[in-house]
Length: 349
Ligand code: NAD
Image (cartoon, rainbow, N blue to C red; front, side, top):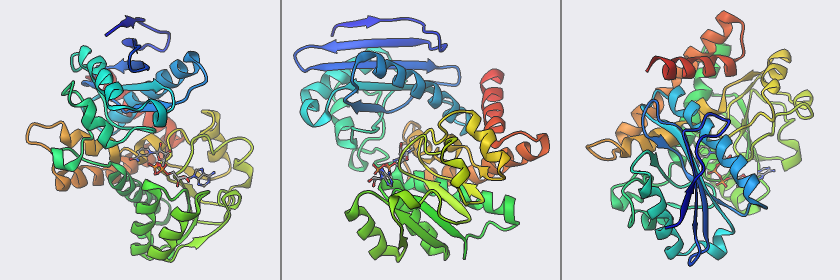
């Protein structure tokens, strides 16, 4: 397996490995940002990047985000991520995933992979033929399966923590919640909200996903371009990153933002912009940590248990409450409070 160690990078990464396997067309970059708290866990993204530089930029950014996410979640895990360059529909053969498994194995357990955008739990089952350092495996292989329901559970308990902080009660009954994107996480979240008696409005660019959610929950549909500015108590971005920006924030009409999408803020300044207009922004990497918590249970000696995973995910309520309390007491944004708590954990280890 040809591979070139690129070594340290300016983002403080421990290891960046560029791996090529010509027979299968595999071109992958694995970035280990930090193993200070434990092995670096992060999924493998399969994406048709226009060039190698944009793939490298993405994997460096995503892997450092994973360090923060694991630390904020209280997990003894570090941050890492991998990208495979190309179209998964064309290149995603079993041979390629086996070759990729050998790449992951060559890192000796310092990096543990899982599924991400463009890869599935079934792909990870193929990776597992060549390495044991892969998690998020199918349930029938003793794995934790699709993390999306646990991610939705974590977003839901985060909303309850935000409600308690803002309105004195965690109940979401009667609260108007606008969900952008009803894919795997969004759809599960809408079901939890509907069971609470929340007034849910939804938008998606995919008509089939919308119809399923409406049939199951009775949620109200609005146009994709109207969801961000819908009048609501809580806005839940569950589709794309960078939806909160200097151009969208002036039009928001919500009291709080709690969603699953990664990197919801276009820039760090947008956390301050939101605070300035009186909108509480629950940091995405805290609210959406249910998926990584679910996978962390699979890593434990006695194997995966859904009940243990649910119990761990429910602790996001306390974590989010602590972050919001620190932010209020120290007059800083919840983002700054979450980063501070995560960095204190890493520094204290
Ligand atoms: P998904 O692909 O299943 O769902 C995303 C949905 O958003 C799709 O239905 C898509 O049609 C819709 N969408 C795309 N563009 C849209 C637009 N402009 N307006 C409205 N809807 C639009 O993905 P998912 O697994 O549900 O993840 C959702 C988000 O949460 C992603 O940002 C993902 O990175 C993040 N996330 C997911 C997990 C997880 O466990 N799945 C964990 C952490 C973070």
